[in-house]
Length: 93
Image (cartoon, rainbow, N blue to C red):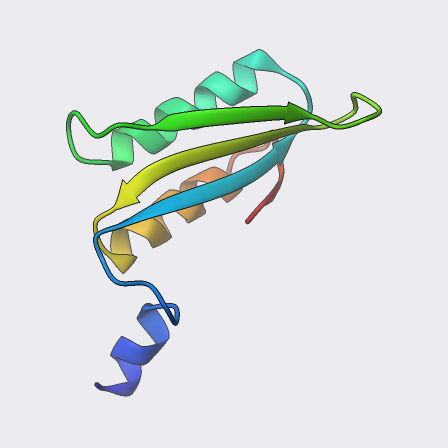
């Protein structure tokens, strides 16, 4: 494996794989919908996204988890960059 390949693939991921993207936003339905749609456009046509939501104990933040199949490291990188580039996102893991 070349150095370039080693830096592109996080340890332990074999593609395609199920990936849970955890995102923290203000409790705003418009932002949650926008983020989900952005991710949908970056996946294969017909790809399934499941979502889970959890409001923080004080109600100040919404934890949004999007589960999808990542086809390769490049696709996953595009998804993460698109999500973290959204102004409504506080943090994405």
